[in-house]
Image (cartoon, rainbow, N blue to C red; front, side, top):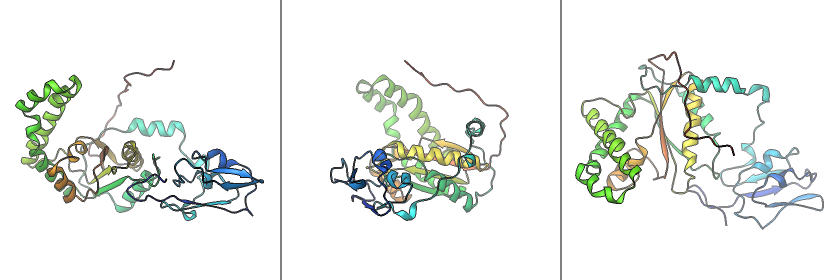
Length: 305
């Protein structure tokens, strides 16, 4: 049976040209659904797949003779492109320097981000790896600071309906049923966050999307691998940085917009198509500030037994 997503529940078709196939077996090696075999010196598709062809397209991408085509699950031979030459790609030093220059920017010039730049960011984000093709990542693009402010106002109106969750009496009642980490998170992060968001918006200040001229909200569906929207958002952030924009990831929106009637109303008003386990906002724009130094970060642990 094919693995379903919000976009399809069909299996892709594998089409093999016996005339072009020379039986090299490269496609057999890379098919991790184990759906290809060599018979009589030619590749054959079997009916013994684990999941059915999900159109990962590794077989057609590795075939040196263009002997395989995939059709279905939003993938076809028309989607194939030649890989850029290795000397055209960024080397490690260039990539590391780009990442080192990245800072969390929340102060932006009042300058729109042009559409061609938005298109480039999306094109880069589409190259992000995914748990299961076709991608179930959805993107909401707010391409003016006014749209970002409207989003922030609607979100804060929704949060006002949730303030009881972080009230003193509610936290007291829930404390025996929560782990210490969850209790600390509610008391020391979620309550101040909700209070700050709602109080600021009432004063006409936007500390949700920070008046950024471009906001992108990456989210999935009930079928999505939870990592997929996060990875796509990260690719978009790096692409925006390479184009000279400042960026900042905003994680304080998605978790509050998934459950309950008020959350459903917010999603409908903002044309957010699905609930999803994970999601992330990236705000972008031309920086109004300039940083001169970076700070070394650390992981909690790096073990190499």
